[in-house]
Image (cartoon, rainbow, N blue to C red):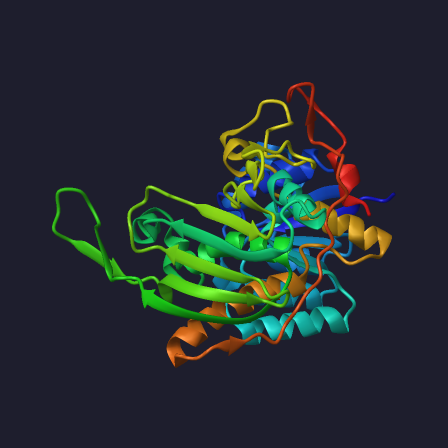
Amino acid sequence: MEKVKTAVVGCGVISNVYIRNLKNLFHIIDLRAVANRSPEAAREKAALYGIDRVMTVDEVAASPDIELVVNLTPTGAHYGVIRQMLEAGKHVYTEKMLTATLEQADEVVALADGRSLYLGVAPDTVLGAGIQTARKLIDTGMIGRVTSAVACINRDQCLNSEHFRFLRGDGGALPYDVGPYYIAALLALLGPVKSVCGFGVPAPVHKAQLLMGTDEMERWQIPGNNLTAGVLQFASGALGSIHFDGNTIGETKHVLTIYGTEGILELGDPNCFDGEVRLTRAEGGSCVVPHTHGYNGKPTLPDATQWEHIYGHRGIGVAEMAWAIRTGRPNRCSKELGYHVMEVLIGMDRAAASGSTYQLHSTFEMKPLRSGYYSTMGGGSMRADAERSLIE
């Protein structure tokens, strides 16, 4: 089957693992070019990972031999890049969030639909071994009927914004920067949300010394609510409790738990691919369930970099969408899923502002991956056949 000719736009930190994986890990991807607002950054990545071409964003849009664009720019730039590429006839896969506002998201979703183009949205950790194993346990009735779920994450997002300046802009608040991993995981496991309510607290004004030993300070405030507490009512009838706190210390504590009539599932960090899945039932206590799927986050390419140990198998969503393009089926990390994640988060903010419940207007469907294919075998010492799970 013909590979999908692909370009990466945006050469920040996360591009390292995307570029390396897309170039070497997936048979369906032909990574031909990288582009960045700063040409120097693009040339650096091209040289580091052996990419043939460095292009401008406009050149990517105009290139007749680029079919798929992977957009790794900051959230505030998503709308412009996605719209430009869709108007140029390219399929697009973008890092989360889809756009900065629902109005912008409405436009790009309608544009993709009108031109019969694929539009995919991260996070693709929902296709990783941890979440897919939990989905299989739920689908096979191991915890009975799901009754509720809890998702929590804390982080000193203000301190993080000192080191990562993009966090000072749209999408930089913790619920929008890290929250999508938790919301997407819940949606992948439990399906669409019907309504939400919530409360929110903005980030404080943050001050940082420009130079050590001086009194000169830089001040900024991350936009939006940096602390969100809310409740999700799923279409299935299950309830979800949300707590995202970016106004506390940086010793991260994450919780992702699914409760059912016959058991409980405790999951690992949904920002990673290798999350442990612990099953507890009324009889027999609890046990860690071996992964039923591949893409467990363990490096499978030679000479693994620090980025692979941190970010694992980023790029699965791109490869799965590339297979969808070639086989003519819907992709799993779809624009509908990405939009629904956005509407849940924005809906909690709107509910907090109005003091009322927000009713969601969007929905989505997401089929699980086929089980029994793995990314590592032989005790993790060799690659296996995980990409086969992305084909159908």
